[in-house]
Image (cartoon, rainbow, N blue to C red; front, side, top):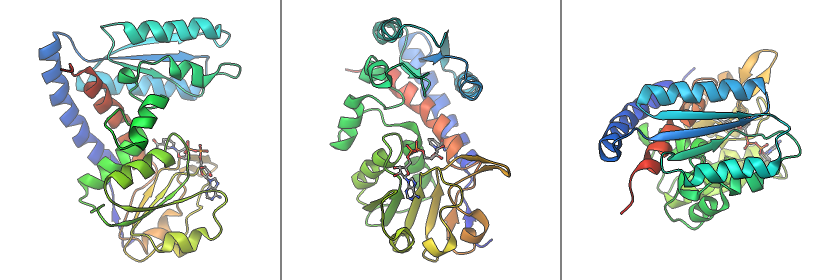
Length: 282
Ligand code: NAD
């Protein structure tokens, strides 16, 4: 392997150290710790693990967390009422509703009940609109983590040719807005893009957020380019990304592994967003 390995775990640890300092500062001002509320509906084992990890991460940096587990057959109105009550609760700074919700529950309606200033996942249309129009707001954690990671390795975004593969609300679209804010030249690719490899080969920065194992091969990469693999795919060989890691690492200048790349940054940015949401506004 010739590419530099971008160590997401180490970068996330340094973000968490900064968040610990910020959480202590805010605790002094508020007279209590910044507080995250999580809501889990149903009994999906993967979601239960994600929630546990998020609570453990909160405890490590001095963020208080509270949790509500609800049955999959909860009435949608009751769920919305719970989220609305959290939205006006002065002791709660951030709200995270673990997705996906069980079928039959309208995710847009439930997310819409989160007050935008407590929307630490950046999923409300209000925060999406602020981001799309270049205004400050709470930004989805994974795209925010990608930018933070690039900043911390000293990648110069200004003027860089960036290709984002994927246009989801959660990752691809917010990434495009964040990259534009930083004056990168951005191309978005998706399932209908005609020549994905040729488009990616122009890029100084390739970010794959697709969910197709090994989609990005060495023929997609300009020698020396930086490759960020957001994909998380469970296969018979274990957890893999969207990038064919070994062959691409022979061409790229820098690359994130899966696991241990973008994943740890996502949780770190959730913590950062929670502390930022807890800061008293003038
Ligand atoms: P999504 O399914 O909502 O979107 C996938 C996007 O990829 C779509 O825009 C689609 O047009 C595009 N696409 C699909 N097939 C394609 C192809 N063959 N060529 C080009 N584009 C194609 O997924 P998502 O929520 O954006 O997640 C993407 C991946 O990132 C998944 O593997 C997910 O598990 C992972 N993810 C990781 C983290 C993390 O913390 N590391 C967080 C969120 C998502």
